[in-house]
Length: 378
Image 1 (tube, rainbow, N blue to C red):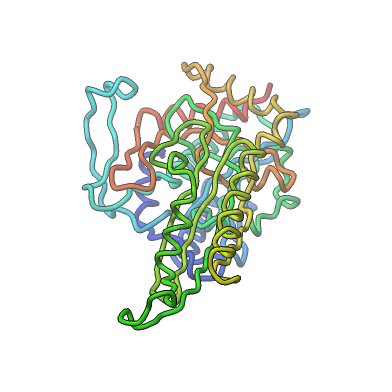
Image 2 (cartoon, helix red, strand yellow):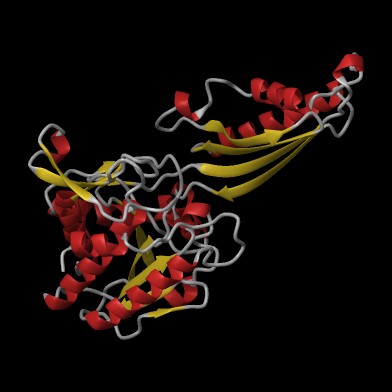
């Protein structure tokens, strides 16, 4: 079966994760897809395919060649929101990277779900080919995770039971990008307490929490917002805000590739709150900052052979690899800190998390070839 056919089948499963739900998986649709994937894997001949009570799918292909490392292949099943049930095809003649190829697109009203059902499809298509063609390989360990889009994908991953020496998440963008650097990431919750007074008699008494919240936002560097940054540049991002005169709550995410700059950004936010607590009554502003994940480069610098293996595979399928920093995170970042070195591979997708998300069929096929070359015995 071609990767594109698998992908089209998978996007009919509604697997949007739900940040408000504390369960794992956070949505029932993820478990429905997990069970379907286990059945598919068993039909392919992956006898130990299984799903645990939290929706994590595992399986493995035994080595057929001695002296090879166990290699893991990982993708996530959830999507950031509901997907297009009926995708469309579009012939591309103007984009240099895709000339002569087809893109799978949506009708412009929803995301496509290539992030990361394309990765799931490519992994299983590559594994099927490895088994059918008897490609020489070491142990291949397969893992599909729930709830990556809400930052929980690695929470309950069984690293010890997975059985891989190292792994790759197949959760990236266009070929030939390989990602082994990602943001250090934290979330910040800001609560501002005000004092509501009738506006007719509010002079020197009212503290409008909404305006204090706006003061705090104004104290953060305006040029360090997502819309003004790229590459390795970090940012503060206001993700949500609600309030009244009495109380305002804001959510932020804080990002930077450089660990020292990342820590400095957290201090800038704390310092802004401290200043406002001197200007207004103590306790007016409360800031809680929680680290989410760290730059996997810190864990991969001593295992660049894993990255070079991916580079070599990309060269074998006709491309010159490009190392690209992730302006986000993957399960691989968390897993690298859990003892499983795990850079990120491309899927052929573009514009993820938006209505204009697309997936190149040509690049999907090449990504399958790339995965086969990664696991091929050296």
